[in-house]
Amino acid sequence: MLKQRLRVILALMLAGVVLAGCSSSGKDEPVTPPAPEPVQETTPAPKPPPEQPSDFDSQGNPLDPSTRRPLSRTFYFDYDRSVLKPADLSALEIHARLLRSNSDRSVVLEGHCDERGTREYNLALGERRADAVRSFLISSGVPARQIETVSYGEERSQSPGSTESAWSRNRRAVMIYR
Image 1: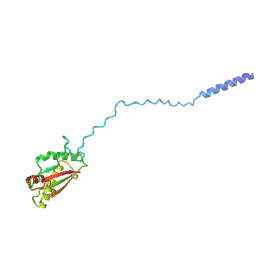
Image 2 (image 1 turned 90 degrees about the vertical axis):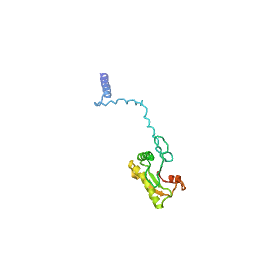
Image 3 (image 1 turned 120 degrees about the horizontal axis):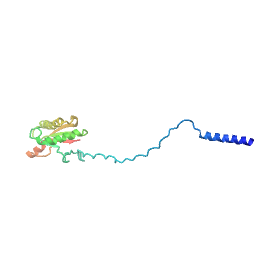
Image 4 (image 1 turned 180 degrees about the vertical axis):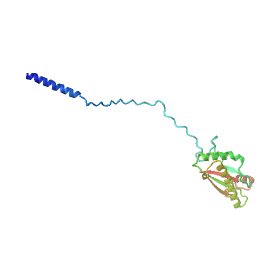
């Protein structure tokens, strides 16, 4: 009988151990779904937009956007005049467009004269010529802070001599980009 009781106790203990091992805390633990596999992009990365051509060449000279050739920066005047010629207006409009779209650039407008007239008169006439170009640019929307004027009168002649041909090349306004 003792053997039989020991077997029952042993069986009950074994059953208790098995049941204790299978018991749970009563809380349902959340089931985490498996991580999704990474999706590979099937569309290629967008290409950067094509680089716009510069408005200036490697030496800083302005270029005509339609032809990519250097723009004229010298504008000639008639004797004793400071009125822009109609032939120069289209080039000046392109200069105005370039200056408006490149607000980091500025210009110095140099006014020049031929050797005729007094020094004071030629300095004043050179200033009026530079101011004529300045007025056109400002009326075309270029901020005044981008424009500086200076008159050299007859001091910096482009073509020495006392002929009409030399004088006509010295009556000018020159646009210098900075």
